[in-house]
Picture: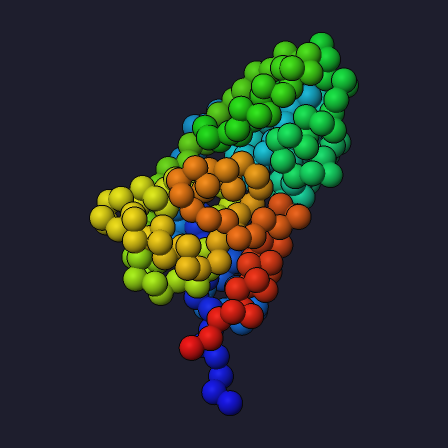
Length: 250
């Protein structure tokens, strides 16, 4: 029996250790990785405020930039969305007081509940953070301040995956945020292949992290096949490859 061709799987993480880890993971799953970084980090050199009752960090990048700015929580309750964020904070020497069971903005708001009523809450994150977090905390009675630690921009080199999708040469795509969806489509626009790329994604297996990313994809005409229960890249990659592999043949 002739061996089936390997799946070609695209992902869009920043061009740092996250891409290296993703390449190793996808290869370990028996697929061919197509790294196409759609996000680059531009630090603002800002630091989270130190006069809050609660401080929320939403990403590994944010945790590392807060540490680089010599941020001092000064007794605040430190909240991290996701295990990766919590691990990054601990690696920098910070104590993490709260990690919601659901790794999302809505999950954090729900888990804090009435505890933040009347409290000062600092949210430190990128310039593309969801309003679900800040609006939810304010609705819970918190006094919310947001600090932008970094901006997320699209690298000029991004776009190889859009051409593969347009040519029907992509078997799966892994979107980790709404912004990766938007940057993928912007790169496709620049190459004049947007419609063909979306058609190519429809023929592939598309996986996303979280409902907000699913809604963004759907709003742009992209059909989403997989949303893993656990909101992390490993769960996403495993679920997508498992979903795609049974139907992949010559």
